[in-house]
Image 1: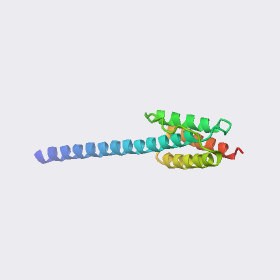
Image 2: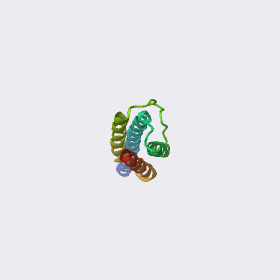
Image 3: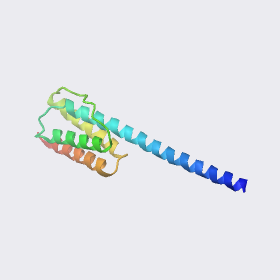
Image 4: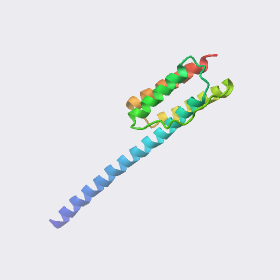
Length: 126
């Protein structure tokens, strides 16, 4: 009888530790995605404004994704770059968003994909 009770407690403890490990891993993935999204936002904020609103729409989608994940945009990245540098900034932000999207699902992923699309449209404007 004592052996069965010990086995049950050990199983319960193992299950709880496993569940805690999964929650911890999920939080780590969200924090990584939040940091990458924040970096993408800052990169876009430094870019030139000459993209017929698509850069700003991409930034708004990033804000929505971060909000869905329970985070906040840090506000880094004020300033404006020349057009060639700005195009490179948008491409860099697009790569960051693609990296962040690998760990996302649901609404945050939808917003990140919309931001990637807006950046593609912005880069097609000359």
